[in-house]
Image (cartoon, rainbow, N blue to C red; front, side, top):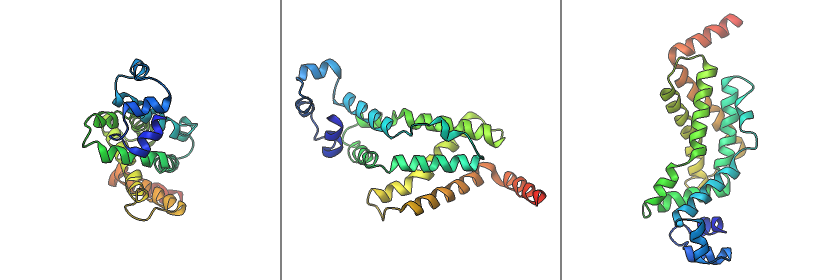
Length: 200
């Protein structure tokens, strides 16, 4: 009930009275379950994000080269980020966090995003053979997520023409290629070229 209200009407227009009435409970019962409206919204965010998660997250991180795994991850991430509910939630957070400071705390407490960064960072360290500290790998993982999502999401929100499935696949492939160039650096690219020449 609360999810539909927040996503359709926004945070400011959705009142505790309206949530309680739609759920068929009293305000007293509401306060027995939640401290305030922000607590309900946080639960809504958690539920929306959890429902957008792929059924087999761990399976996305195994099988294939680093490039293949990142491409698979990028496609799954974009699929989730461009779902109607994900876009609606993003609109609410962007549009109303300025008026309601409590939303800033909710949007920064996105444990699935933090989990994704940590998993990708571990993948980068484990698969690339590059000596990198956890902070460096987590920074790179965070940048990968932003590179993957930002422009397609903006266009899906109406700031441009939404990408087609073919365009999204191409976007993911090119993003992964550019990201890996930065991750490996000039020396890493030289080693890969020498390995390819030797194989030929």
